[in-house]
Length: 79
Image 1 (cartoon, one colour):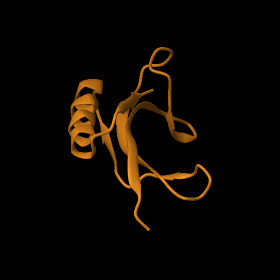
Image 2 (cartoon, rainbow, N blue to C red):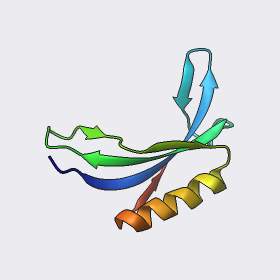
Image 3 (spheres, one colour):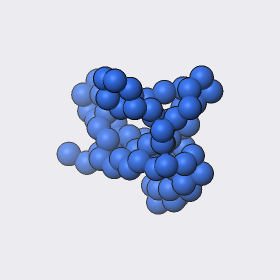
Image 4 (cartoon, rainbow, N blue to C red):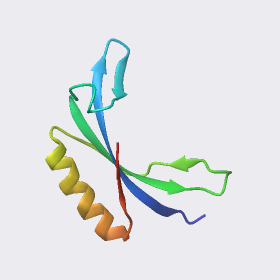
């Protein structure tokens, strides 16, 4: 089955007592930023993440996201 990259996502994360969680960078101070590709599958709106990488700064994450978005000709969604 061929999958298609839908978008590149950039998401802030922080470490909590329960582990690593995505967070709202406007409300919390992130520990880093995650960049991942999201692919759509044939199974009713579910998705896979074939590529994921963490970065220390938002700038590094956005630079990496721009490269991946250009490779796949998709948009970047930032959370």
